[in-house]
Length: 193
Image (cartoon, rainbow, N blue to C red; front, top):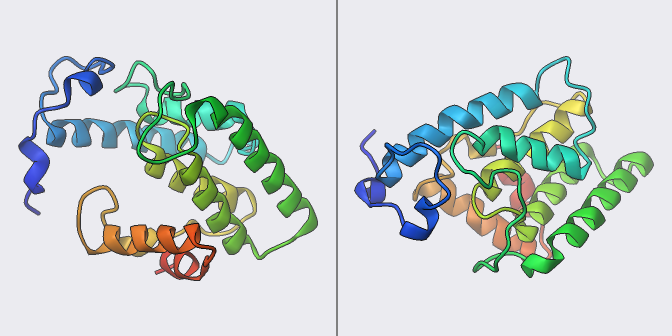
């Protein structure tokens, strides 16, 4: 598969300031480097012996650190500025605690089937946008951790590339926008497609 059009794009200087590996100069190099780290985080999170409760702030931060700690100095640290998506950065901790408490309640009381619960959890975590980067990838793995702890299969996430522009990403973003408007149906359909 050819690199996306922005693969040779130099990194933004502000973004590059938190970068650990000095050899990375382009978005394509960054994507490749991050993917290696993400796989290590995934292995840790979904390991059979890992019995940590994924619905804690400590787990949320640790998973992000394990996914991006070899790439970004700030991995596992909540963002300290506003972005074009997400809650006000000063509300990240409070909104995350609300989500984690809600998810514990959903699970304890069986409010929804596990797929719907994990999809709703994913959507809310993405909408909080706790970190400066990697939120979608992190929130997808968090949902898969929630499913795994309940003995359910991980989501297929449309079986496509959700990081780069393309059909799968377009479908994913449309499903998230529908969820923003209160319709979880398209996201539920997408996660198992």
